[in-house]
Amino acid sequence: MNDQDKDIKSLPQWAQDLIFHLQNQVKELSAKVADLTARVDYLEGKLAKNSSNSGKPPASDGLKKPPKTKSQREKSGKKVGGQKGHEGKTLKQVANPDKVTTHSPDECTKCKANLNRVEGACIEKRQVFDLPKPEHEVTEHQLIAKTCPCCQNISKGQFPENVKGPVQYGERIKALSVYFGHKHFIPFDRLSEIFEDIFGIAVSSGTCSNIEKRLHQHLEGFESALKEHLLMARELHFDETGMRSEKKLNWVHVVSSGEATFYGMHEKRGQEAIEEFNILPRYRGYAIHDHWKPYFHYGGVKHSLCNAHHLRELKFIYEEEKEPWAEKMKKMLLQAKKESESKDLTEERILAVKAEYAKIVMEGLVHHLKLGQLEEGSNKKRAGHNLLNRLADHHECVLRFVTDKTPFTNNLAEQDIRMVKLKQKISGCFRQRKRGEMFCRIRSYISTSRKQAWNVWDALAEAVAGRPRSLQFA
Image (cartoon, rainbow, N blue to C red; front, side):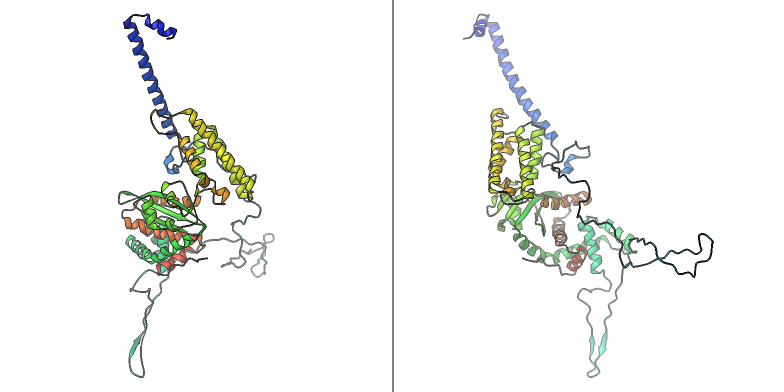
């Protein structure tokens, strides 16, 4: 018994009861203050998160002015603007212009003599690049009948297979309708206005819709071949995003390589959708993704995690949570990226990167061990602790860009999936699930066409006619 307890014991009983009551009250209030402080820190942390320091999409930042952020790109040391040797795309004069207009003087600027019969010489040329007024072309197909001079039988010619009605739109008009709708996400009503204002053709919304339905059918074989083509890639990028259809949340999945893109729509985000699309289950290369757990169910691939996500999370943990290990990890990852891109890393340097990585992770775990539990009796962990556990458990996947020369980020898939969000912003959601499936298949063909360096308009015209282009297999 210490002196303080002796002093309390010497007081009257009512005073001792009051002191013990107040002491218990102080303990309860201290526990509540600690709990509320933790909740305030958690909520402030959520408010501080934006697209620059977390996995939140840019659209979630809202219309308010975003905070000033420092770019995560390292300075290259190069001057601003086009670099030496870069092939520019500025206009250049052509040797054989389509039209030539001369501008010659009629009289002498000094003595006013008539110069109309005087032969001149060109001293300067200027060229104007412009577009002619678009005009539609009408081709009439006539069926000719001939009478045989021997047996008097009447033989008739045959219309081309794609000419089926008395009046119809041609393949290039149909392809342009699809191009505007699925490449630039222009709604049907505005498509009709474009055709009428620019080309003088009245193409109704219903016609545009029917064109898409037929094209979707024509691309069924292409989609099957596309999946087989993707399976041959060394590395594939995977991502998914929400898209509302029939007033329900659906998911658009994307599988990307440098040469092709697959889009697929499904009610589920996870393994059920992955199994139905049947690309990842059969794939045996490098799968780059953002740590979505269902991807790890497939052990036949080598997983490589997107480090752009890690950099954003590390930035938040360092700037908002004030954890020094996060800044060290960020610098280490960027330095390793720089070295892996500039030259082949030696085995010794790779081992050094792994050792430094493990050291920083251990430093962070010790830091959180000292902090103790976030909430008494709860398994809930701080954002930094959760990230550290992920970096520790999947260290091989994080450093795959160093050991196996895989891409540092999942940007290829994110750039492809961003088009889906742009579609949603411009045209809204899909009223019918079938429309979403049609969009994904046609968008797969358009995105793959661009990656294959095909002329998109020509490729779409061939697909509308029932002859979609084929992918080359190595």
